[in-house]
Image 1: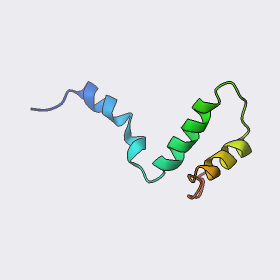
Image 2: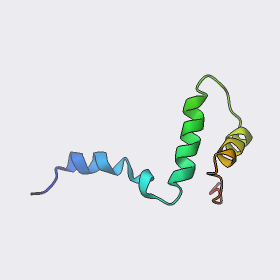
Image 3: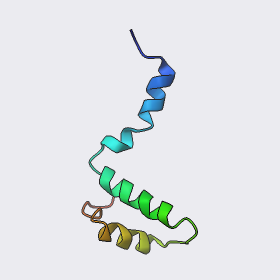
Length: 61
């Protein structure tokens, strides 16, 4: 019994949780959601991620 295409598409939206960088992604998202009313610079995001221990991988940009 196969899954409908809609279910597969919906599940693909969560593939970011399976990549090696998922810890960094989640740390940055936690930082953003904890400070929705604050404007953060890129440097502040990097520093916040480093404090949470998620800045251990090399950035892609």
